Image 1 (cartoon, rainbow, N blue to C red):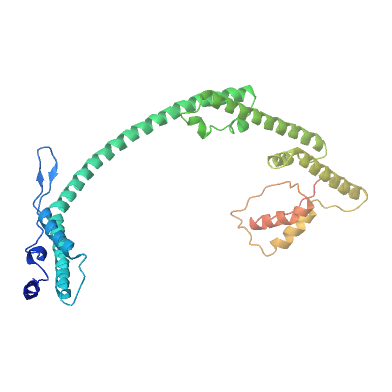
Image 2: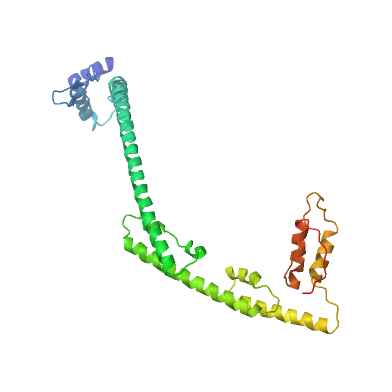
Length: 315
């Protein structure tokens, strides 16, 4: 270790070997032992090594370096490096031999236990899910009875009764059945209002069409996206157009029903492919339209590859 340097310094009275010499210091950790109380004991020469190192640290930590002692202190510092390396090596070897295998074994055993727990949890969860689904199915039967009851109470036709929804919150465990019933009742009332408004609109449309030759059904279908008043205004405009055509006819002007759409179709169909005779079917169709929609009708017939001819009619 210090060798001749220590001897020289001793002769000069600078150091005392018993105070500074590390001696043979090597950390040794013994095999862990299991106590009778199931606790684990770890033993080794921790105290002896610690005391020897601490003695050197205490002796030199406040030393003022001089030309005479600096080389020896450098030697001591190198010994500290060797001590750190030796302690770290012993620690890693101990972990590799004793701790890591134990950790791996415990980890494997716990994973097996957790797999059993997961299987049990999954099985119970499945049973609970099935139980909850049965609860929901039974509740659905009850709620559907109320749907039928309120549909009859408010005279809802099928197309309106089918719009009553069994909402998600009805199935919450905290939901009170009477709250769900009240909500179904409210839905039925709102649908009755819509049905009444629709029926009133139908009667208005039929009355407005009257004996004009206009087809009420074509306007009634528009109630799904227009208000009755909008449709009545549309019928009035169509009646006005019809009256204007009749006036022109009475004035001797030649009127060809379907003329605007005919011209549009003829212009679009000139280059259109013809359907084969084997596939062709003949149907008589009456088209009620506004002149400004002629181009749209013609385009639709072109896309469908429909061949046509116009027949004189008395309407």
